Image 1: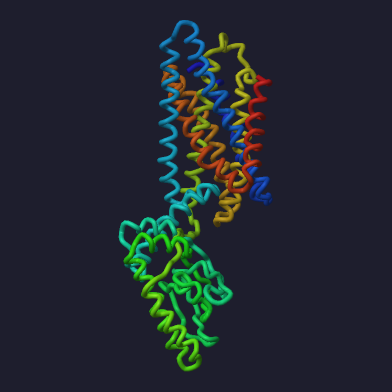
Image 2 (image 1 turned 60 degrees about the vertical axis):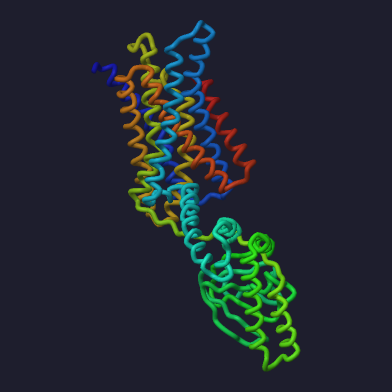
Length: 459
């Protein structure tokens, strides 16, 4: 390797460092100051737009343009091979990112970003929901529901957190819903007197589901903070219409509840007793019910520092390879390496896009990692280490490009581009959307895209 090649490899190291220096800068800002959700949303969207511009202008456009020119010039199999290599590499890069991201997230790396944290919580929620559905399907009256309608039931249950002291059923409660208690305890009152303490598995408001006109004789209050699955009358009505067995079980349950109510009131309310007895009998011959819509789960995110760091590294490696490989292509295309200067080979749009995207990414992610329990020093060192690795990766990308022919080099760039674009769609855009409005995300993305493209004026 001659001195000129070594110098060019050092240039690649420098470009990698420049593009990634915004990582520790963004981390330092995010750890020292809190920003509004709107600001975080706009910054994240801006970074996503800048990175999209860098990928489209610096990676995809040259290969696509070469194919177009070759077609107008009579055809060129080499240009077509490069284009196909880019497309195949992009698909492979996206799939590779998804697979590695899943591994890292399952080990606790999901806490590095709001979007990945929300995705992991949603996954855990689905698991919790399946477990709860198994328990619900064994409870009366849902044990009478045929298996063919179990999925419908799952789609109807809706998770609700009820604070201590809130009224779940009674004269001033919502008679359009009932609740299955999953966690916590409730107090049941009849005629103003305490009747019982009920725990998980209790169906609260069953009478209101089947016969709203009978609601109001008792009251159920949350004794502790309670986790419930809410039922809407309209959905239960649909299930009853689809399943005669379920309809019968609902009427029997309501009838039994009315019998219990009659027994509790018998010593005080003779008039109410007669009414309750008549209602219990009539319920066995007709009725209705609400819906069931599901989802429950709330998980606290705990991630190991190593898994978080690996997740950050996964997000950053592709860009470093692109920087080094891109520099090699530029240097190789120059007629005289002796007269070549560093400022002549800087891919301004690519570097600007990476720099502008890295800053908000590190800023928002550092705040998430700090909230998850990592120390400020550890978070900052993670991003600093990533900057160093990005720099080294750019040098490695430069050297790797030197041993690959053009088609394989385009393929490698396609893999990196596919991984980066997948990361943008899977993490950066959802991050922005979580914190802001659609219009803020849209305009922020546009601003980032145009800002990165404007650096073409400098080249």
